[in-house]
Amino acid sequence: MADETSMRPEEVSSIIRRALQAETQAGGFAAVGTVLEVGDGIARVYGIRQCQAMELLKFPHDVIGIAMNLEEDNLGCVLLGKDELIKEGDQVERTGRIASIPVGDALLGRVIDAVGRPLDGRGPIETERYRPVERVAPGIVKRQPVKEPFHTGYKIVDALTPIGRGQRELIIGDRQTGKSALVVDAILNQRASDVVCIYVAIGQKNASIARIVETFEREGVMNKTVVVAATATAPAPQWYLAPYAGCAIGEEFMERGGHALVAFDDLSKHAEAYRQISLLLRRPPGREAYPGDIFYLHSRLLERAMKSSDGKICPSCGLLTPLPPTEENLEELKAAKVCAHCGEDISGREIADGGSLTALPIVETKAGDISTYIPTNLISITDGQIFLEADLFHKMIRPAMNVGTSVSRVGSAAQIPAMKSVAGELKLSLAQYREMAAFAEFGTELDEATQRQLARGERLTELLKQDQYVPMPVEYQVLIIYLGVQEHLRDIPVEEVQRFGEEFLAFIRSERPGIPVRIAETRRLDEETQQKLEEAIEEFRKSFVATAGADGARVEG
Ligand code: ATP
Ligand code: MG
Image 1 (cartoon, rainbow, N blue to C red):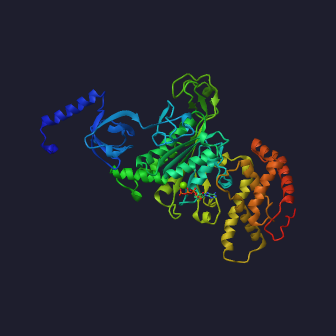
Image 2: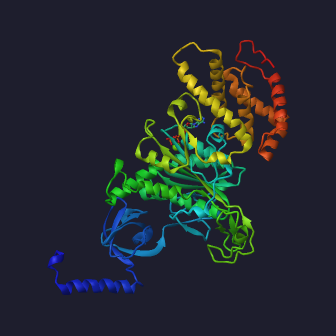
Image 3: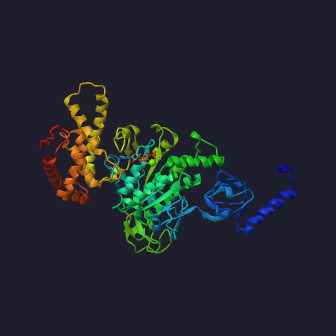
């Protein structure tokens, strides 16, 4: 092949002329190219000009590709179908469409892959609305601070690391520490709430995904849940796309003024897929062989979770046009004129509450090491993290949340006052307990005050344990924690604490149902309710029979 320097001027100009011709024929850009090389799910295409990043490309045999690397004379794209079907010299067409996914109510109850194809055998998805999987996260004007709680139903989380709607809370832990269980239970807890859920499974076995879907169905939440699955056998580009697809589905609900949760299970696998794709695209490897832009990749994704500003909902397209959250010019805002999405007149519409998209990304650590690249990135991107520890998990302290290192940076603003009133004391007691427990391990003689703190801490730890599949409404959580922080467990043997709590709640349910109802309605634990609660505890204690003691003695009142 002749190199460029030996080309004659006429040859050069004829090449340019042909290129320009092709461009004009295709309406300003060359719409057709040829495959230069293909393999490992990646194709290099020559001849397409002005292609957009993430644009869909049409290959023969209905194989779809996504343009990822836009280089000067060729583009690298990932193939979403079987790459064996594609060969060198095949024709490739531009579609002009950015990778997008069907969205809307039609998706509820469905299991789809990362490009929106149904995986549940229940026929096509009947929707007209599509959204690009990637988009630039909305700016500050379209957001407001989180203010409504997102309840996971786990006592330990809702009390100590409360999550607000629109928050991003990372769930981090080694293999088999209950990470998936936490998000699955958080979804089950939405059965009666107005939050729709999107569970994104990345690189999980078909059987595990099927089991989770079955759980959603059994517990009656599948009708308000979407499962986006990039299974273990799906190609890396599917793993890469799945979280963006899930995010786009959630955004649609949020932009209609609703509330959505998106759980990414998990982003370690997503990062691995992106590393694989990038290396195949011959991008330079960076730290731990991940491409340099992996931080940007994850922040771009998680930045899309937010609490939207209040705004007006368009009667025509149903989407909310967010208005800047300034109290002063409310009158001006009320006069807002046209829908930002379809241009329809919205001047007469009332101001509606903004929607939210809450994100629960999961990341896996190896041997508890959180200082590796992906976990440290995600810790800095999110608004807090829940550490699940293998140690605690094996000691049967489940959920295995490390209370000392888990934090939630914004969610406490959204915690209901009733929970706040008991959680403060709980936090303090547990912190003291941790300190003392470390001390007590040396076997030193302990004074009475220390022993009391230890006993209290042990009981509180017992109280916060919770099985899978039984998320608890927040008003009941308040009652349980109240028992512990108000010293009602002092004389209950540690191994009886859980049973005491359960039977107490059963007692409340049947004998004093007004108490939780009142807390749920007012969101507070007012003096009157507290009084009633004290009376209820008093009465319940009379009936509680401790079985741990040899004589099965009644607890002293
Ligand atoms: P992986 O790393 O494999 O994804 P994971 O961290 O997601 O694991 P799970 O699959 O959620 O962990 O849980 C591991 C095991 O522990 C499961 O068998 C699950 O049933 C059990 N488990 C999780 N949470 C609890 C809990 N709160 N109480 C009792 N068992 C639990
Ligand atoms: Mg898991």
